[in-house]
Image (cartoon, rainbow over all chains, first blue to last red; front, side, top):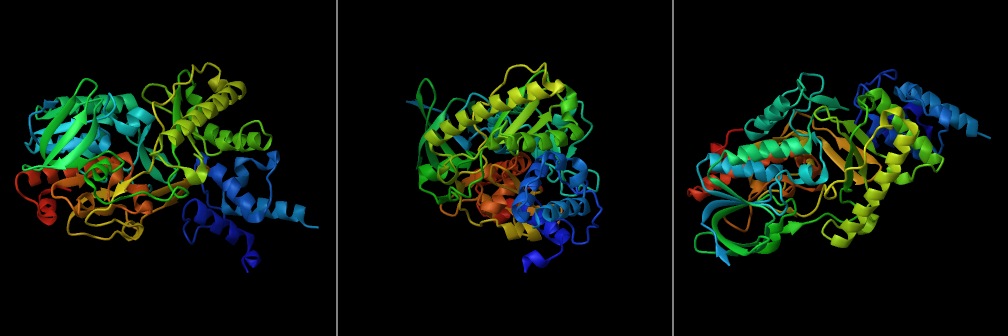
Length: 86
Length: 417
């Protein structure tokens, strides 16, 4: 089941299939802007994540630090999902 | 009807592919006619404000930039650098690009073409008909004042729309509307502070755009907008990809093009007002300088002796008749919201002469956006750096053809890659 995979795995997969392939062994704390994410891609990434996890980011979520690496994105997504949970 | 002096090679289209094709053929000592429908050289750069040169450098952002092609592509890279204050290309995401200004590119092209006495140019001229003749082909074209006829041994289709295939009855195809690359609307502003060019500013702007769209302060269509400050003349270029009537988009339908152009103009106005209202860097911005036309990324392409595929590019398939190298990742913009990049396994991928050569007609070549490549592969080969390289190769091949060498493998062996 896709939903059973760790959040970080799903984030990375959604990133790779919508923007560009990230290296297999990319550490969770590696800067994805260094890997090639740019300002245009960032907008796209936000939409991709919202669709993939059925969440909606709010103003306070939209800070660069939150999207710096797969680890920080996964933490943000987890917070949003927990917030949604009944 | 005016009968022009016969030539060896006629190039249709004066964009980056056509400029390189004409130069390459003339430098091989054959007579060239270049027919361009607008009033200037430069193609999409001049008409649609394309302001970054993509596809000039090999795919390896971890190493210093290295040119992907020799010949005219590297000549242009050097001339553009010489005219700017840049010392080299800049990194955009995972790739190297060479920022430039459309005006400058047209000027460099004009000077190089003017230095070749064997090239004649016809501007504001469009091809009406092409027929086979005893010497090769007879092209009928119309300039503002009269109708012309010119005999030519060979033709290079650099029209970006395989228009020679349309006129001769050659095999050309266009992707289905929903998959076709979305067009762009690129406009420029003067008086924007260079602060707007920093990565920090651009990333914050992206986040602000998403926020403003959520608050309905900006239309959803602004998603994916990007900006770049030209290091050469302080222009700020802003690019917006257009949804362009989603499943009915057809770059050859003048009504669809006109309505997308006006949608782009409206978005440009809304976005500029937003920038001026919220960012000091834009307080002094001058009026919008619109493009002359939409940035069309994909339309008709030829089906030639070989069709280059996505897999060929990813795995770097080698060919005996390699004449140019692709180096830009496959950049698919099938929606207006952003690009999907697919990188190659190697730093470059080979382009064989057979995908620049007609399978039906002797002496007919194609370069630039309308080469024989599938939808994904052409999302790499369509960029200006690669267009210069395929133009260069076909110019040399057509020159060889006009001297009696018609085998693509033999021609390819004479082309310096």
